[in-house]
Length: 173
Length: 232
Length: 227
Image 1 (spheres, chains in turn orange, purple, red):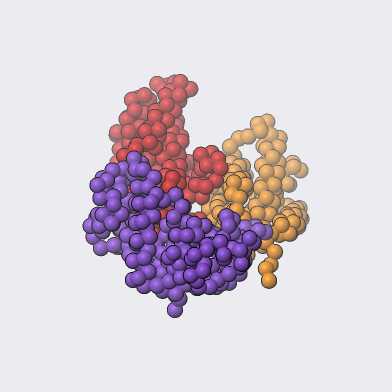
Image 2 (cartoon, rainbow over the protein chains, first blue to last red):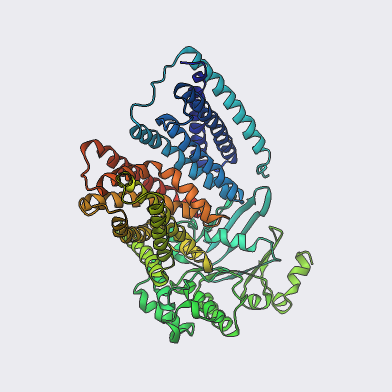
């Protein structure tokens, strides 16, 4: 296996961690109505989208070097593409709602819908194209890269969330 | 126990405070007139009381219950800016529908009764789409009163009513008050409101500038409250 | 519990009566379905064997697109005269409101599908009646998934600008598992073949999807309607 496929699994893994963060933050917002959870969910969704996009592009390069084709409807990449669309719709929904508390509530609900779909999408893609995805080997370089990307993703999310927080509802006295 | 109790309610749209620390109460059998300029927050407050939106802070109680509870909603009649009746259904079908939704006994009979009381009996089977504006408003009034609510929340009810409809509504409100029901009405049509009101609350830019009894001088000179407590 | 289902019935009956009186949504949905079927006939030779293999998949594209026209109306029909306020103020649980609307939309979309199916059968010359009971089951499962997600999306997008675009954009990615399952099973059944044991997984996927998304929608609809 070439050097390039060192990247796309950790990229996807980081995106998955981002999605889990977004899911938890969305549930947190719905229970507490604290806007900091909303900022976190928004930032985590953006991070996931970015990392997943990079994973898909990187995956295309891997497939190209192996088969000469840019896209082969490989189960993993198909699932990644559908998940990318799911997260993109979460962000699109946010853009469409102007009032901040409604926007946060709607985005939280839709994040839950989207994140619940991720395992279903993965299973569906695997059944649709069985046997085509190569098993993942968790070598130390891959794990190291996953940890590094997860930290980078976490930092990016935190900065983004803090940036949004500052535009948020100030505590009233 | 107050019929309507608003305790420390704030509503924020992003950074903008639409309502700031509103505290007011309405006792059973009283009529509270919520007055204020456009944009003062009257509709926002009324919709929070009715349970359409959540306050950012604070709470509302209607007869001790949370506005979003089903049991509380059964006791409330809401008349908003829109008439909330379906154009493609007939007057009778609309009222029967609401009768069923509110658990009224024998909805078709109650519907016919209220069509009588609002002068719409002759057009009972006409589609709302074909009604005149005044008829639509009277149907909306029938819808709000149909289930004999204990608390009536009305958002600028006299706006866009023709004389006949104003007569019908005023009569129904007087009856309701005499029967010990509670009315909270937002309005900038001061004259009609102050004739019925026992209490007045003035909202100025989201804050309560005045909350007290409606005096005969206020009823005689509606601009008085604005002049004394408002921004002129 | 009986009260809940009675409320569901009242809401569903109201939606159905209003729709059947105007027929706006079903007429446009049916017309759209037939137009797409026609266009697919130009794109893929309807009498070729290869087309017969993909026919089941094509059918669900038609159903998904045409269904969106009906689903969009679900909460949009409450906008004129602020009727949505009337429903939210009423002492009806939001879950019953959602379920009532979903049931009404389900029946309407299923109706459009059952009218489109014979037309499709004729255009593509497929023996769709051979496995009709199983085909009907797949239609019901797939349509319920489409309806539930579409009705929740309708509630979310009712006050958003570009509503007609946002609803399909939200609905289709979520539906990927159910839609793919429906396409796979329909392709088999419409060709006149029975569902084999290897395909039961798809059936379970569709049932699982329907159960999960119905439950989540019922739980979260209050948050959407009152915020």
